[in-house]
Length: 89
Image (tube, rainbow, N blue to C red):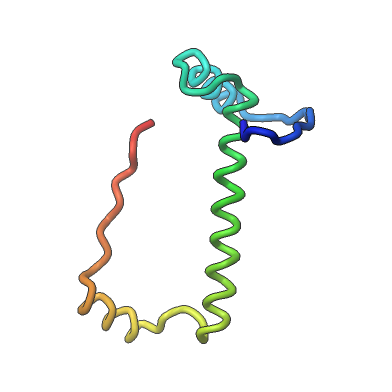
């Protein structure tokens, strides 16, 4: 939980598998509580949403996404994008 932040209690319905994963994280000591685990996930989602919004604004200001020709030129200059490997949790 973020220090100094006030909290609000809510009820949500989650898939069983996600609840089980959150409980495992608590049991392993990765999270202090299921609530803390969920709060952390929501914090990361909010950051991602904020970045997506910022990217949308930046693209709007610069004329939109790169064209295929611009992407090819960037790939030549920077090298093709590396395929990301999923991290195991």
